[in-house]
Image (tube, rainbow, N blue to C red; front, side):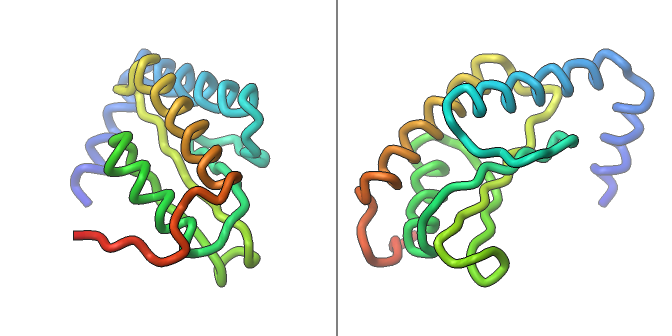
Length: 128
């Protein structure tokens, strides 16, 4: 929509915003890798994070990130990707801070721990 066009215009006309965006992208991606996350290969701000788990666990994960860590990210599960895999997509922007990125890393470490140790319930979360 209208907002996207404005944002693209802004990025085009403002090299410092573009530099800040890429600084954030590089910081997020390097910190994810340092902490053992699989981000595949990406050359765009859209940062994939691959995890193992089923659709139910993925549902808990996304609710957990949103409700407890204030992180919104899109999620892709079976049948779009193979069974047992979860793909999260993070999109850093030029307005994110280093603190935001550090909080995101902490949150991802926490939810991955829950996922790997099967700490999410085995039924779908009730979202109200």
